[in-house]
Amino acid sequence: MPSSITKSITRFLAAPGKIANALDWRKANGAVLSIHIGSNSIDLAVTAHPSIDNPIQPLPSIPIETETKSNQKVLKSHILEELGGIVKQWKVCGMLVSWPVQKEGWCGAPCGRVLHTLDQIVQESKIVSASRPVCLWDGHHFLSTEDEWGRVPLYGVPTEKEEHRASQEQYREDGMVAADIAKDYLRHHFPEFTKMNANKASAASPSGKQNTVLVDPKWLEAYTTCAASAKASLY
Image (cartoon, rainbow, N blue to C red; front, side, top):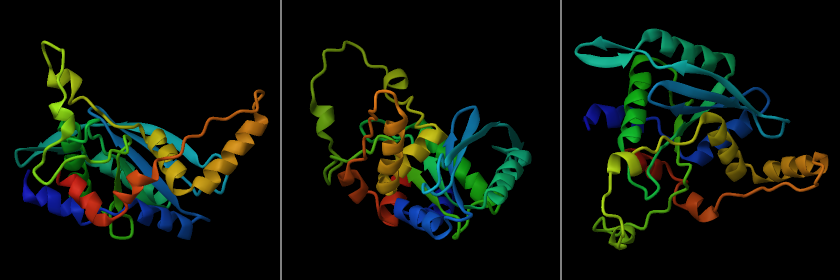
């Protein structure tokens, strides 16, 4: 991977807690933008502070269109202009980007696509900045079991399969869609509001029951530092 890509992205990576702090600070008029970068489109959702009702609002997806500049495929300028308009309109103070690691924790082609797209956004616009950082959000909440030699116990488990096609079974993880990223993030970083909203939903539900699953805190401990986020992007 070219060094220019990793440098431009890691410069603006932030720990998940920093995004939550920014949203707390700007709860009256700020928002977080959730982004899922797929192969054909960019899925978006904006999230206000969870102290208000229905804080998550999905936005229309932006189809991905590219053009060739200096022998490289890059996003067309109108995509960056549209993203910039959304950031300005909703007063975005941080971004949650779906980080599509495989279920065993390895990074495949979808992660490369995310990094490449973020690099273009950083280099060609002011959408991402020190005051509007990016957090890579892993929807699997993966806790690494890799030792210092890069060995993972999972790969030592015998299989009864006669054939394994990695392209179909292993490298097709596309990550969470934007609205689901937002819900997962709020459950974890604003549990008091999540519980309160769940109680409201339970009271309004005919059955009186609402199933709310909070994120395992052990996963957060491994993912709360900016260094951990940067390490993820360099995996």
